[in-house]
Amino acid sequence: MSKVSIERIAKIVRFIRKRGSASMSFLKEELEVSEATLKRDFDFLRDRLGCPLEWDRTKRGWVIRDDLAEGGRFELPGVWFDSSEVIALLTMLHLVEGVQPGLLEDHVAPLKSRLRSMLAEGTMSARPVEHKLRLIHFASRKVEPKHFQQIASGLLEGKRLRLEYWNRDRMENTNRVISPQQLVHYRENWILDAWCHSKNALRSFALEAIQSIRVLDECATEVSAKEMQEHFCSGYGIFAGPAAHRARLKFTPERAQWVGKETWHHDQTSTYLEDGSYVLEVPYSNDQELIMDLLRHSPEVEVLGPPELRRKLHAVLCAATRKNSPSASH
Image 1 (cartoon, helix red, strand yellow):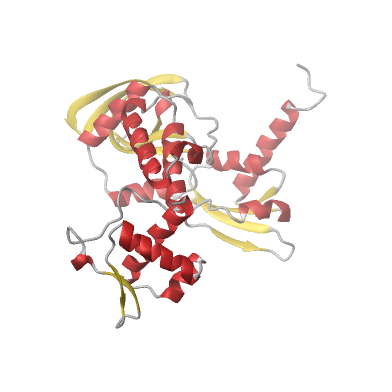
Image 2 (tube, rainbow, N blue to C red):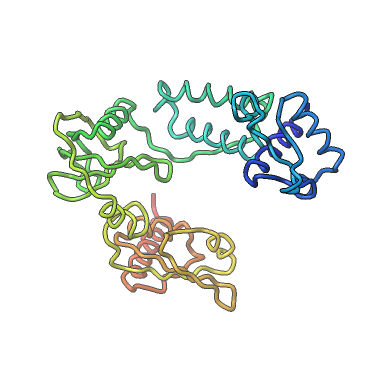
């Protein structure tokens, strides 16, 4: 039987399971096949797979009589996937492989093997299908695998961690005792959100900046989900804190074709102007990441407010212009 037929058989069973019954007209429309094709599929289900498929006059549709099935409930043999499920599994597989090569290899290798075997059961040939999906990762920073394993251990076991951490702003090593709260994979890189006991506040730590780490015997302090949400989700980007500002950004009609499809923040508002320009408003607390994204969209974006954000972007653009002037000396 072909792959297409395998997918169609699985869909027939799912439709009937979901609706309780399915009419011939419904299945013909949803699957876009003829009645003769459906009848052949019904025969295959009954004769080859032992499915207790029957026409129910009261429901005016096809039903699966589980009371007649061996074991009490009919299930398709093996693992069956339709095309969207195959793509979902392949995406998972590629994401796991691309998070950072080698970082989780010892733990992920058995999972990858299992996913591939499941795909093979559902599609008859996993490897050719796997090559039809490609995810490209860019600019990820290398994390020490041992550090990742220690953090994961402390996080899952609810233990505090002692870190030697490189502070990029002050260009110095700092020592912290933290209670890990959650691991975040953000823009190709790993971030640990934690309660910092020396600062007595929530902080975010880039995993690649950790110089050394030790799991302590002390139990971690647990921060409520509400407090985590308020701290890490109120403003734009990974630089957390209560959102004290709201940026108002105007994109050209040309750039609006892309930005208008994007979600920058769950609390954003937006509108299109008559000329096709796109005005986006997002809350933020720290403008560091916002400035980086505005530089990425320059000169197709204008900061309408607040004034301090506009001044800062202008200063950065002027500095970049001076540094990259064709007449600048080297």
